[in-house]
Length: 328
Image 1 (spheres, one colour):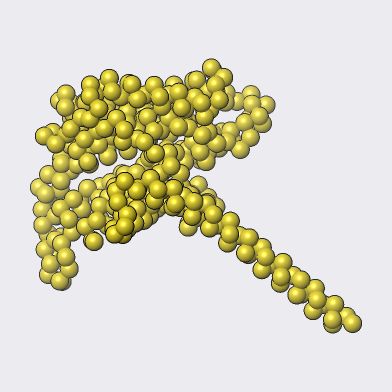
Image 2: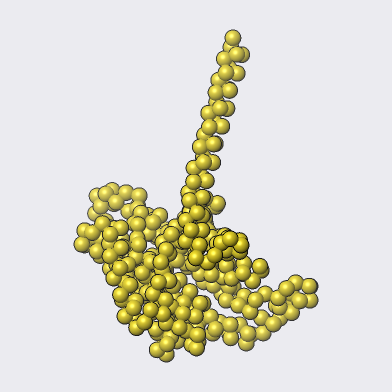
């Protein structure tokens, strides 16, 4: 049970990077971008192909993010310059990326089992410091179970994800970031102020897909393979992470909202892991579980809000009656 929960947190913290990318388009830009289902695989395929070709894993991961940025920019160009509906532009790019990803890998699945990944390099680096054995020794001395051998990966990925979150927070508070947020709120008003909304949208969608592709490259290295279908349903996972995080932790500030997205991604993976441990559910039910989680996350806040409003009306009615009786 502990190992499975550890794995859920480990993958959840990587998927959180993808969720931050989805947050930028859906919440900040108000741009329903389905490119992410293709750019996630693009990041995985570019990273896998680069590593197989002898490129250092860290550089391969950077290439994955760059490939995602290019794919996102092309979607932005289709929407802004080609005057194609944002949803349709994302679908078109997602469809095109399927063939592009096949071209990159040369086959539907590309294995990394015999290759050195960035995570293996991190584990080796961590082991060489001696901190790993020291920490596990301390746990054993106080009677606690040793952490899995990949706990160093989790620690590094938490640092990386928090770093990306802080950069996102800083970017959204800059002049360009504020303009992006304003475009999502009222594009016509920003245009009336002579701002170049087209360039801002292209850059915003590009950055979003760079995050998504980066997550794809990391997931491919964590799982040991890249598959052309690994991005199916990814947009629902991203939205589920955002909705769960916002429902539980709120969105009063940008800092709080991005933290909510990260925590929402981790909680989503934990919920899915727990659900799959139920006897009558199978791995093939994952899409159904995801849909149910999203439905609950969407419906529950509205039910709670309607109950609060109902209680508020009842209290107000009672106060008015009490005031009427005292005047009589």
